[in-house]
Amino acid sequence: RDVIFHDGLVEHFDKTTRLILLKEHLKSAKKVIFMVPTKEGYVPNTGYGDEYWETKDEWREFIHQHFKVQEEIDMDDKIGFIIIGEKP
Image 1 (cartoon, rainbow, N blue to C red):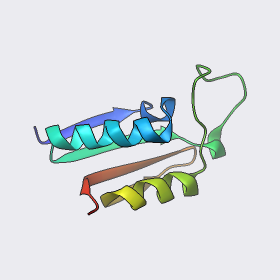
Image 2: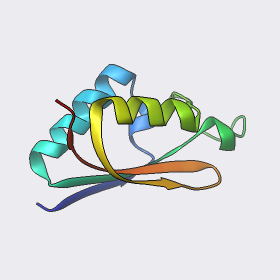
Image 3: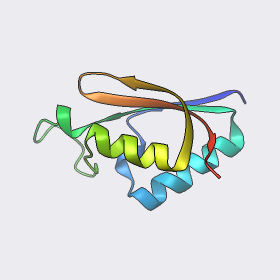
């Protein structure tokens, strides 16, 4: 597979599980493209109740710490990444 894409999935998992999930995706595809909502766009009582709300900077720190990032997509209330591998 060339690409795995998801929007609004990984924020439902704690950081340990996010890491496992994204690493597993990279075993199945050359690139993983994903978007997540952020605290900057959080509106109370509109989510499903099990999101771990993070700021854009918190997402950046987590993703760049663990993965090789080809591109970052910064939107008003979301942030996205194209990851192409794990960092050694």
